[in-house]
Image 1 (cartoon, one colour):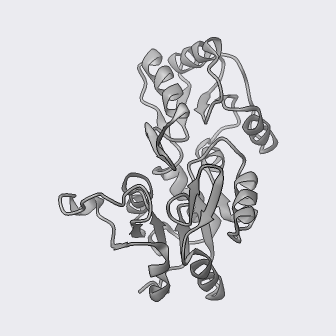
Image 2 (cartoon, rainbow, N blue to C red):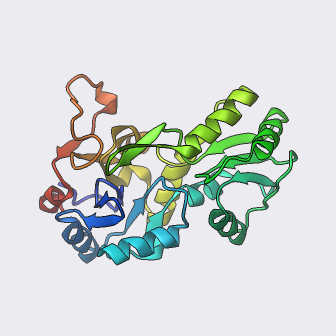
Length: 262
């Protein structure tokens, strides 16, 4: 039972919604689960590793699909990277113009030069080799290399979608002989962002998602309750051979099964 949980963290794709081409469908039971949590007076948040749009744009898209989500309930690496950065120094960001504008409005000091104190790789629409080289030189000079996600691919309606952000971060990592720090799922930055937003320590949270390596791993970082849903990318994974440290606390076929535990 989840009576003692003080806040809930949900993955989006494969957990609360399913995307088929350009259409987004709400998963069975998703609306009821969110409504029951809200009725109990407990906060919730959605965390997606998508970094090609602003959090507000993601939230608006989910509302259009029929999922009742407020702007401040939607979290992405664009917020957790801000949580991670401890200084006001210049940051070289590889992202599309919408994301660059969002981060600038949020107060990040953006630069396009090698004097950056950090390099952050989000989703990119195109590769500019001159910028890649400047980013690599900045990292060689001491800048921290950050990436929204380093997973090589993520689940799409027609199979795996190769991550452009991961490919871009890998190019900089190779050129600078540096391992990037992830600020999306699973990372301390993401966990602290969620904990701060929900006003509860990580061990008092429940993390619910379809990805062992991202959602369950995020919860395990902070001792949260973890629930794996089989409706997404981990549907066919055999858990019997996994170490206890990687296994979720519970496994359900879909998010609607969580209703009985609230």
